[in-house]
Image (cartoon, helix red, strand yellow):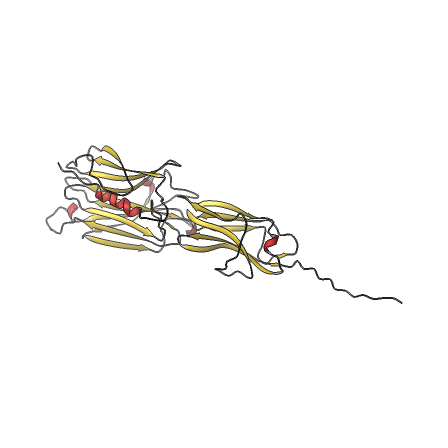
Length: 342
C-alpha cells in the first residue's frame, strides 16, 4: 500500500490565502477530510492555513478523495474550499480563481467585474494504448444563484446549473478569462451567487468518475443608494431638510461615506464628511445601511450651488452611488424706497 502526501490540497489552500494587510482567516478553522473509496470511510484532520503533511490513512486501490473545509465560528458556517482525488494512474488537476479582490479565504468578485480561472493538469499519459482515464479529464462549469438577498449559507450545490462541459487531453496550464459572471438573473447588476469550476477523472474498470479538483467564486451585486428628502435642483432657503441615504448591497469589503461640497457634481471631488455617515464593512456577505444627514446647515454657509453624494470604496476602486445637486439662497434682499411728505 502507498501513502499520499496532502501537499497538493494544502497548497491549494495557500493559494486561496495569500498574505495580506489583515488576517481574513482568523475566524476560520481548516480541516482536511480523507474519504477512502469505495467504502467511503472518512477521516478528518485539522490543518493550518498553509503547509503540508502526509495522509492519515493508506490509499486503497480504488483511490481516495480529499476535501479541504473551512469552518467559520460566527455565524457557524462550513465552506468546502477544495477537493482532489488520488489513485495509481489518475492525473492531477488544480483549479485557481483570481479577481481584483484579494480576499484570502474564498475567491469573490462583483457582478460587474471580471475574474480569471487557471486550471493546471499533470499526469496525463500520451501513450495511445493507455486507458482513457489516464489520457483525458473532464471540465465542468456550474452556476448557481443565491436568490434575492441570499448569502449562500446552507445552499444545496446539487441544484447548480451545468453551464458548459469540455475535456482537457494534454498536460499544461489553461487560462479562462470571464468579463462578467453568467449567474442567472434578470437585473445583471443585482445577481448574487457562485460559479463553480470542476475537473473530473473519467470512469474506467478500476475506479468510478471522481472529482480531481473544484473551486468556486462568489459573485456579489453592485451597491446602489436611494436618496430621499432632497431632490436634484431643490432650492434651500431656510433650515436644511433631513436627508436619508438608503444604501443597498454594500460589498463585503468596503468603506462608505456621504460628503458635501460646493459646486456641481464632479467625480473625485473631496468634500466635507457628513457626521456619522462613514463606516467600514469587513464581512463575508453584502450589507445594507441607512445614513441620515440632519442639522447640516453649517456645511452650506454661503449661497450657491452644492452637491451631496454617497461614495463607496472597494477593492475595485471608488464609486459614487448617488448624488443630489441643489441651490442655497439664504440671503434676504429687501428692495424699496423712502419718501417724505412735506
